Figure 1 (cartoon, rainbow, N blue to C red):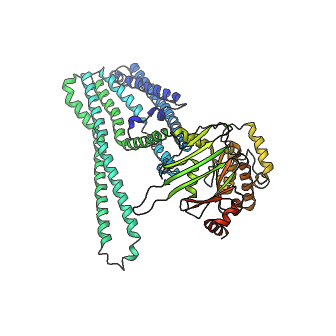
Figure 2 (cartoon, rainbow, N blue to C red):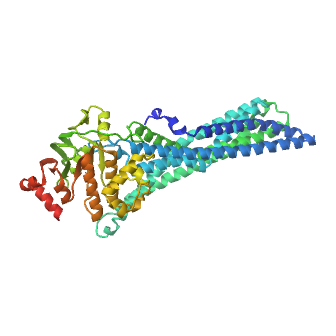
Figure 3 (cartoon, rainbow, N blue to C red):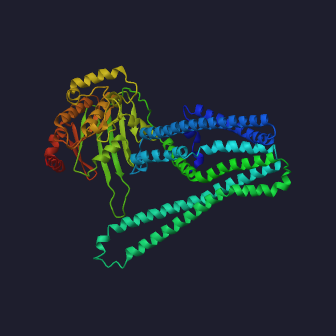
Length: 587
């Protein structure tokens, strides 16, 4: 992933972030100003031992200064906490919203849902942004305000003694740079330990299952030999990491005496004649060594956060390349006259050598508005693949779907560009067991809008009159907030079907629930199918005899081929595969 393509501003600058950024910058500037005063006030304190008034006045000034440092740091940390909180919330919300609204286009058996399945998306969003939050809990962000304070102290000291000030600045910058550079190698060592630990876990998992068979099998101590190699490798790497870890932090801890020794070495060249300046030097070294040691101690957190930012940035970049549906859907009337489907060929890639790839071949039919088209066939015949093509989620190699509108508009899928794909998908509504229902109100789930129009309530009353199950048995209203745990698959399908009816999708694809439905809910679903059929062309993957019989046209698939089509009566007398399907339904 080329990080130059990442829009870092989209991560760190978001709506409402400017006030926190401004306050953080003000705190850093104040820290620099307060730090610049320290050497002069400490020097003045050391010079005023013989004058009681000046001495106590210097102590008061230092007290006020350090109180200001404390308050400024507390305000800085508060702003950082708020900023990171909203930063993480913003990134998580943006990623999930972009992912859930993005169009999933699948060619063959690949698509971004395969690259980013829902479980992995949620895990990645949470884990990668959590590493940023850990910078707050570990106090890593405090290093920055400490650095501003210390650097301004050192620059201020240069005005008191140039030689010593410049020497200390150069020495500490060099020490911090070496510590950061050395941490790169530490990171490699820690990663090798994690890899070796994974090999240990894998070896244990592989061996434990076969322990019971070792008595009966002449294994020649294979397990012992293999596990010994893996454990020796792990122990060697963990020992190496411990040596590096302790050595690394020992170097950081030893900087204080090393810097004091450096001051002694350059003492003849610094021309220091006042004890006050020596006191300032010792105080300065003590203060400046803290941030350098913090850099050494927090470098692992920083690197983990950096890798998290890289991963989430890569994810955001990928999502930014996709085309998303608008957050607020503009409901509009769509005209539909006829749909013509010509699928010359579609096949999935071969997953294993010698294993034939499943394919759809020579599927051709047409349908008109107001028709109910049933798609039937024995399991594995290609019903789901055909439904994915009709939904626009799967782009076939050689196929064309032409939607002819009564207003003269022609929409062709897949067409010549992605705009043709998105336009076709705007015409299609999908009602399946996987239809998404939000933990929001019924009205939101049907309108898919935060602002519910008045026309919806008229529509809802019209639906209630025709489907009594909604109010009399289920007992939901437009204001009812849905609980995912208490909604059945059939009720999800019912809401998704009502959604398609309200949005007036001209093409509706219905994947019928095969079993386990309450008879009253099944009747409600059948009624809503009839309501949809009045205004749309409806395709249904049928699992019930009643649905099959009521279809205007039935497509019979077998091994990826359209073997026959017609009404229930005509197929019953002339299609053996259809009879097999009905026999399967009856059992």
